Image 1: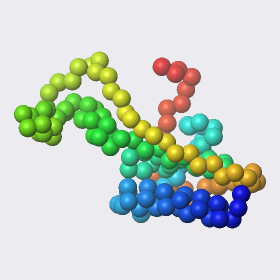
Image 2: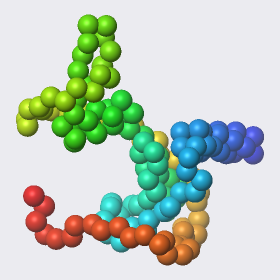
Image 3: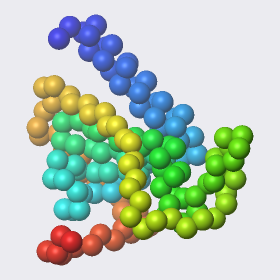
Image 4: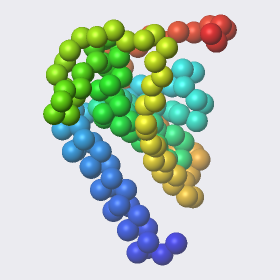
Length: 145
């Protein structure tokens, strides 16, 4: 690959990262990465939550997961048994409480971008830097239900 193509690729990648972490999450100054200790797919080394998704560091690249913000808002409403009601003017944000059928189907639309660095050196490994003052719990066990 020519040096011009590499420069263009790195520039576009940097722009995407700046957009995701600078524009989409302006209130977050720093990402907090959690080490994978078996709670996610083995390809993932670290994961950080972002406002509408997640950022995964892998051995030879990274993946950015983004959820549809309107779907996330609807999911939060469903979780709190609080659906916006439709008004005659089409306003869907009146905030009226109404019961939700327990069998209501819901689809969360998402997309993921995976970046793989061709020719990445296998001996380069991301290591945890320092422990965070918080902790995360994950259900562990053999019962998949």
